[in-house]
Amino acid sequence: MSWYYTPVPTVVPVEEFDASADANALRGAMKGFGTDEQAIIDILCARSNAQRQQIMEQYASELGRDLIEDLKSELGGKFEDVIVGLMMPPEKYLCKQLHKAMDGIGTDEDTLIEVLAPQTNEEVKKIVDCYEEMYSRPLAEHLCSETSGSFRRLLTMIIVGARDPQGTVDADLAVEQANQLYNAGEGKLGTDEEVFYKLLAHCSFDQLEIVFDEYKKLSGQTIEQAMKHELSGELYEALSAIVECVQMAPHFFAKRLHKAMDGVGTDDAKLIRIIISRSEIDLQNVKDEYEQMYNKTLLSAVRNECSGDYKRALCALIGGA
Image 1: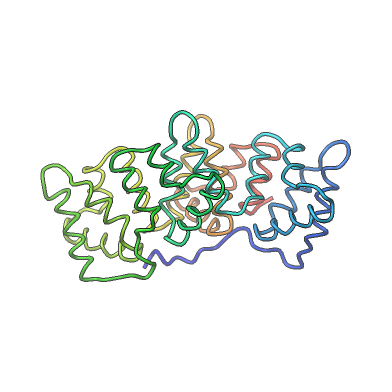
Image 2: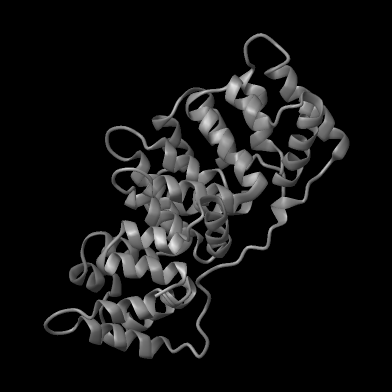
């Protein structure tokens, strides 16, 4: 099944790691007049998140200082966003992105979809626990206050962990489920949205892949084509994201990276978020997919869109000087 692609990260733990030496080198890079930004990039963009946490602990115990506070006082702008983002444990980083998407006036539904759609139940549980710990408010409650309708119900199902565990597959049931989707959309006048979001939030990714194959046999159309006719708005965007993640998560992220850099201006927040959050999961796969889809490398696209230390940090994470 295509869902079982082998995830290849671009950032891996460095061998012969010395947290104390890194902590002291970082202090040296920030001490006195001026800052050695390249030294910060060379260390923090080439360590795994677990290693960065150890560096932070050494920095506090040996030097009696808070590494994140020091970095914030020395760096600025988008470069600071990258480096400070790298210092957060992965689930904390994603929780911060979710909170930012819902904080203040208006809601950034696109970020909610991007963060939540690819997650397995286990990953969602970590995010849910971490969110309440960080913001003293349940994620479900915050989401419900910021979204509505079928989109809210879909997101709620994702975060309560309604999805079957990975590996849960029933081929006979898949035929039945493909029929349910057909009868809820193409096979009737109007659309029964509930059937779509319940099924796509409940089935394991492995099961969904079989359901989508069965749907094509039954209808002659792909599930994406059918959903385009039957659904709209945030619900359509969220369900499309789930379909893409089922079929090939790197394709989903490559598409979003391209969108972040396409046209006038750059969506730096999206660019930073995807590169940081996928760097230790499957950013190499995303890079390969990007090059295949757009006939240029992700590295060259980032070099064209970004500048200075910000560009150098992202390029280091992508894998390239």
